[in-house]
Amino acid sequence: MEANIPHILCVDDEEEIRVLLDRYLSQHGLRVSLATDGSEMRRHITEGGVDLVLLDLGLPGDDGLSLMRYLREHWNGAVIIVSGRGDAVDRVVGLELGADDYVTKPFDLRELLARVRSVLRRLEAGRTGTPAIRQPHRVAVFSGFRLDLAARTLHDHAGGCIDLTSGEFELLRAFVQQPNQVLSRDALMNSIHGREAGPFDRAIDMQIGRLRRKIEADPERPALIKSVRGAGYLFVPAVKHQP
Image (tube, rainbow, N blue to C red; front, side, top):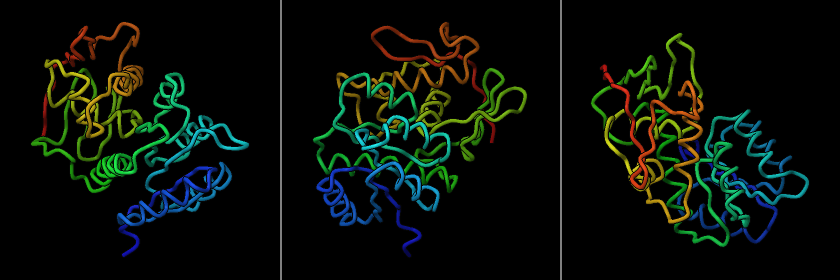
């Protein structure tokens, strides 16, 4: 039975935070492991079975952003950064490195749990092939790319696989399902993270930037994902859906 319970790894050097997260998340049906530094985090990741990492940036001995980079290079699970470093630079860099979300300390436990569950739902949808949002087609083809919505894979015109984080996949799925429609940041944030964007929330802009670097011929002059000033983003390619 335990194998079916989502496994959360909390990486934080503050004992009070670790105890708080362990107790609260366990009470809400999640399996929790704890790590105090990068070495323990890497050990848990190597042992396997972790679904989501809650990562503090201010760890002793290891720079948190370096650990974020390590996770994206060696592991395919989800990461939510939970840090007292709430300035814009850290948020931007963390999201650029592929974090699925960023929560600033002090945090509300209910909000953190909601974000954890939102990310876990997307992970489960990818593993089972069951989309978080019902979709009538399995494959979307656009501008030489082939997005398999069930397998959650993207291939280019030569058949090469393009690695996408879970957030980038959800973003691209939202675009191919609603091409040639201006999608606001709030709509995209709700589709990806299950919440609206805050007034200073740049998560969507960061994910758009990463996605452009993966699918645009010239990310500085995007031809596929257009910015619409004051409104949001527009996905302009013709999209063909296949069963």
